[in-house]
Length: 588
Image 1: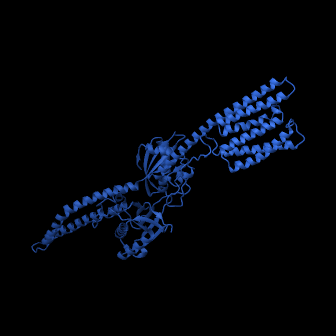
Image 2 (image 1 turned 180 degrees about the vertical axis):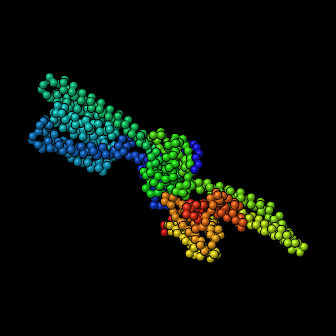
Image 3 (image 1 turned 90 degrees about the vertical axis):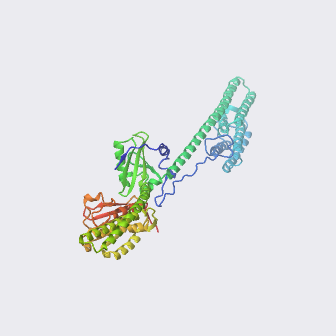
């Protein structure tokens, strides 16, 4: 494990801070597909009613309060109709002019019923209906107040709601004009009844009450219009800010989804709040990851998260790990917010792409180096070999001299073989990858190897689970890698080849996207002191080899975004493990 202190990118940090909540519909990931599909959000729109003109309402559907008011009007009209049909009335409503009261109440019921249909079908336009319903209600209620003896009947309070209605739904000069005309009509009605009454002692008092009521109506109407207009502007501003935030979150979400770097937002307890598609893919596309603990499918990441929280937080730190002992990942941890209330931002970077890039550069350098070696060494080496051959044909050489000539010739051949092996490695820098069904390809390889080796078919066993696993690899490179490993087992694992058994096992580790392939034998294994140098070039314990076989096998794997390592088996024997990155399962 390596530990490195780094500074997080401010851009990515700001993106992570603006990431929408984990339960957002746009952040949901379908885990039953090879690639996430639903990391896209629809654009947030702000529809506006075509009849609202320049005025703004708090309710997104202005027809709702108007429809509710039409229901209130129908109930009120029904009560007034019941009063006209009843002979037992606790107060003298409509007693001063029963005919006017009856006609007004009946007409009011019919209008209330028609108003229900008008608001339901939303015809005519909203602004027309607001003033039409309010003005009509005021006219009917004024007639009822008149028929009941003016403001002394107590019905004047009913006129307050239709006066306030246009100030709330359509504030402006029209609502103020309607309020003023209502006040004038009320004063006129009261003045009429006062002039018709015989007593004059209560005239001043009754007119004062009427004036107070008129002032109250005008004040309430004006204040309601001003307050609702300001409240509507505030609500619209908040709505626009919400849309801006939603669009910003959508933009951040889109950027997060397009990043090749995996990003996971975690609580300090390890519970996942969000992960982008790259991290979801790196962790093997886990199902139902939301609100689960990271340790359930990534124990290595969770262990380093706890170490960071306990010892390093809030400083930024990086770790190199192997997820499920397969995928090589570099993780970087940083704190967002306070230590107690904030969240942890985890960056995941798959090192296979970086390793492959470095491998390409190294292979290009090696190719240039080997071309120079071949030019500088092969010509003099050929001359030395040719001279030694001519010298061996001389009859004047004694036995000792002939032995010296043979040494020159054998070492010339060995040196030429080494140069050729290095050239073969450098020429493999551009793999031609193909999609291979691993089990079918290995069965064919085993048949070919058995035909060209001293092993029998029962000495090599094969087990691949799942059987439909596919890898991306150059078939010639894979042939060379496996041939080298199996040939080494045949040569060095057992003194008696008949006792050798090679076991090839492939599996798909849980919560990873990689395929693991183990090539094991029941030989004596590799001594501990030789394991560290096993893949070094030109390192060999055999006098017959060049020490380039395992080095070449690893280089070919790296060129195909795979890895090759040696795993010591507790029971003895050797195990060479291939990890095929970005493998997938064939769903056919």
